[in-house]
Image (cartoon, rainbow, N blue to C red; front, top):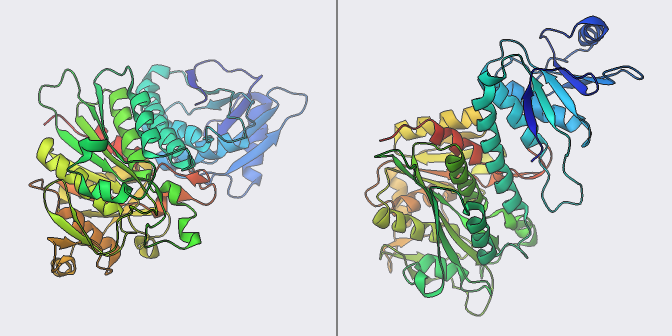
Length: 472
C-alpha cells in the first residue's frame, strides 16, 4: 500500500487538500478556496471533490473535499474521492481541522487506502506518492492511523485473493497464501489439512472430488500472549475457489464471477491477520474450507448422501448448493475441537437475498440478539451494511429428509433455509451468526471506498467487531 503519514509541516510544493467548511488556508489560497466553495453548489457533499488549478503558483493544485456531516463515513467518502482525483505520482497534503475527531481521521485514512486500491496483478501500476495528513497534534491520531492501516491491509488482501483468477487460485495455492501471510508473526499459528487428513470432512471431500485440484482445510489462529482468559471467536469463511455448480451446472452468466466464491474465506483471513497486527486481546481462529466445485468423473451427484465431520448426514439434490456442505464440516470441527464462545460465518452462499437487500447489504442471521447488535454496529461503523432476517421455526420442516439426517438443498426460501441448515452444525454454541454476503462481495463499478471488482466485504466489519471485544 502507498504511504499515509502524519506531519505538522506544510509544504506548498505538494497538492493541498482542504475540507470544505473548515478553516481555510491563510493568504490568497484561502480566499480562492472560500470563493470557489461558495460558488460551487454541493461542494460540501461527502465524496465531492472540486479542483482549483493554480498554474505557475504554489501549491499548483488545491482539492476541495466535501465531508458531508463530518462524521466518519463522510470523511471515508472524502478520502476515497480525493485519492481518485490525485495522479499516482502526485504527492499531497490534507489540511486537518484542529479539532478533528480521531474516528474521522480513521475514516479519512481508510477511504484513501481503500479508494486507492489496485489489484496486485493489474496492468495499471499502483499509487507511489505518499499522502500526508497535516495536524499540530499528530500523536493524538497515531492509534487511529494504525487501526485504519490494519483494516485497509486486511481488505486489500481479501480483495487481492478474491480478484485472483481461478486458474491460479486453487485450494493448494490459497492455503500457501495463508502460510506466507502468517509467517513470522508472533501469536499466529497455521495448520493445513489435506489428503487422508480430511477423512472426516465428507462435505469438503465431496465438493472437491470433481476437480484435479484437491481440497484443503486451513486453520489460522491468533492467541494474545498476555491475556490469561481471552474470549474465543471462531470465524468460518466459505472458500470455494471456483464454482461451476458441479453436475448441477450453472449457466454461463452465473459462472462469470464465481472466482469470488471464496470471498468469505478471504475476509476472515484478513480479519485474523489484522487482529494479530493490532494485538487485540481476543483469541481468534479462522477456519477456511477450500475446494473447487468442478465437473468430472468423480464429482458428487444429486441424491448423494454425505457424512459430515460431526457424523451426521445430508442428502444433497443440488450440487450447486455446495457452500453449506463445506461449511458444515468446518462448523462441526469448531464445535468439537475449539470450544468457541462465538461462531461467525461469512459466505457468498446464495444470491437470493440480493433481491430484497440489493448489492451493498448482506443478510444477517442470528439467534443471539447481543451478537447481532454488535455485528450491526460494527458494520455501520465500517461502512459494511447488513440486515437481520428471521429464522422461522416452521421452515425447519424444509430440511427434513427421508434418507438422511437432513436435506441440504430443498429448493425453498434459499437464504433462510441455508442459515437454518448451518444452525444444525453449531453444536452447543448459542452465540452464533451467519452473514450471507454474496452480493456485496463484488462491485461492478467504483462506489465510494469500493473499487470495481472484489470489495473484501466483511474484513472491515470483523476488525471493528473484534476490536470492541474485551477478554472473557
